[in-house]
Amino acid sequence: LYVEAVLAEGLMLVLEGAQANYLANVMRLKAGDPVRLFDDSTGEWLAEVADAAKRNITLRLTTKLRAREAVPDIWLLFAPLKKDPLHYLVEKATELGVARLQPVVTHRTIVDRPNPERLRAHMIEAAEQCDRTALPELAEPVKLAALLASWPAGRALLFADEGGGEPFADIAPGPAALLIGPEGGFTEDERGAIRAHASATPISLGPRILRAETAAAAGLAAWMSRFGD
Ligand code: SAM
Image (cartoon, rainbow, N blue to C red; front, side, top):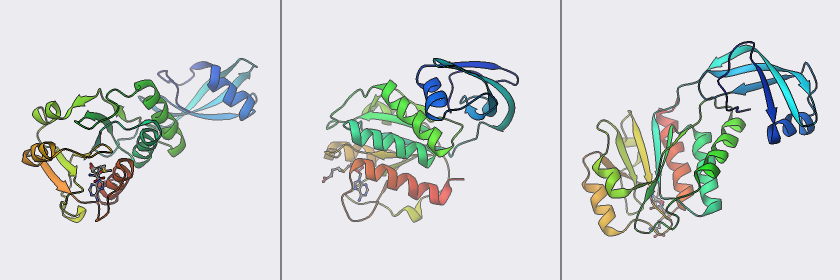
């Protein structure tokens, strides 16, 4: 369970609202029952229920199970999609181990500013399900031109180009970012600007046209299968 707190040994934590309801009424936890918590900073802890009331539940932290893990150094740069595909993209990227989610506004992007709170909620839910103790970082939306102009040296920009690119087998290890376009794809000008960037390598995800959210999951899975730990 993710908690917005800095966890420490012996800490007494009172949870209310949905989390208390989940632990007390869905999981029906009683005093003495164990709970695993993480805070995205110190790591994962074992706690035990000190008191389970109707409206809130008190947990006592006992032992630290593991430190916040280092995640593979890959970012996902994506043109924000409509609600359900975006939920799928954020959930799969989190499960696959992405370090950072960066919305990129392109000419054909439909949703310029996705709701960050909703994205964060999907990230947390996915992290709890897949046992991550480190949440992906969620960056502010940025325009494609600004992203390219301020691209950090030393990070490979893997441009998922359905128009053709290198097979994943040729990708070198190292800090990377996977760039996925919107449902309507990149414009020719955008593709030219990306391909012209010194850090960019166009990559192919096969001969078929994938949905953006499929391309994000497929691209991350391909990278993770080679470089993820
Ligand atoms: N141009 C596409 C079309 O003709 O329908 C629309 C874009 S596609 C739905 C969404 C994004 O997924 C693309 O911009 C690209 O980044 C990625 N993508 C889809 N299929 C791909 C493939 N076979 N190889 C590499 N990237 C792909």
